[in-house]
Image 1: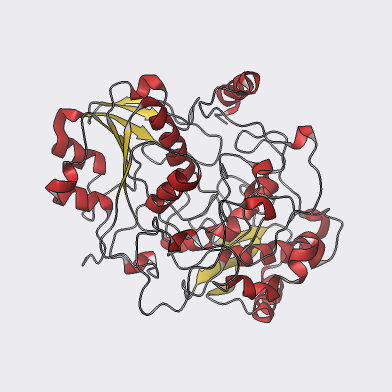
Image 2: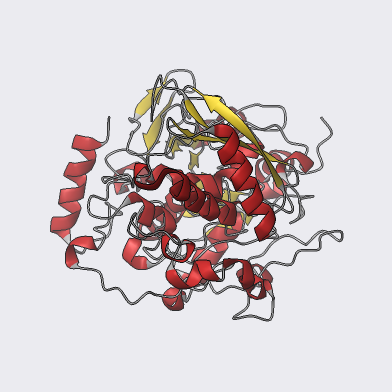
Length: 475
């Protein structure tokens, strides 16, 4: 495989001057996709390079081996018998490295393959690690990797802090357009993360690249991401996690296959295709499909629906596709489409669909029969007319135009990073949909109680959540 892109890990292994920036004893936050182009795991490479200075490994959601399914399935801490190192799980009774975990660490190296989507939890693990390392005086080095969605498009509403959770710890659009290293720089600039931060950028990556153009092997970054196409559709079809519609878990093509036992595949696929053509949504093709999930929703039952095939990743708008898909499913199924009930990511008093959207504006009573109400009264009526929001002259400068945007735009790319203000979410600016606050006040019971992020305030709430995590984490 002829590599066009060198990841931060590859550059570290090849460049003594970068190696010299890794000071003292080392911790390594990684998962199964933390590999070299030759598929050597980064933990082996760093152990060979740094020897006894590598003191501990850390793992995000889904575990060091990327084997834990779904949300609220925690991974234990353990001692790796081959690597002879402790592995601390940051999706366990804690989401944050404790002072004891960091006690003998001088530099924590983060090497995670992210997916460029707000609800994909690896960026939030990184943000919480930055906060913990700032408190402990530990330096952080991030080995950057490609955003599989590319870096030229941003989609979705800015998540609202009332719906804060581990799938939206800070305000971001669903598809944010940054690499994990750029998110770290953005966090340092706007969210007060003051840990000593060093990002080792990639070499050869361009913002318009899809993953297939990087010349790198695809290794599952989580159990339900078998292919780069899965990553491409995820910002839209992940919304189905907030419903009783199967998002294809328990099949070989999760998030690409969607279905329900009461759908009729051919007429539904035909009508949804017509809707997409009317809206001018391009970049994907649909085909009627039937499948039998081996686990999760409708296990062992025949589900009919469709499969989404990516035809042109540069033209695809998966988040907008997902919103129209939800509406079309409601039109087809009516009251048979139900919202999934809490808990979801340890939040027990907010509907999962609202956590996924980062807002309640896209959800309405299931008895409402119009597009404008199922997706938001103002937003959906004008969803196809909001292209002006993609105009770079609209709103404050996009973060990728600032200093933490590390990579140049491809000369052949015709799509500029859209204008969007991530750090001022009070107006809820959106990239395809106007998501202004609906004015509905949240009751105290609807406000999110945060998980244990290591912060000192609100001790009673944190104790409740710690108890919640230990009792309900393993399902």
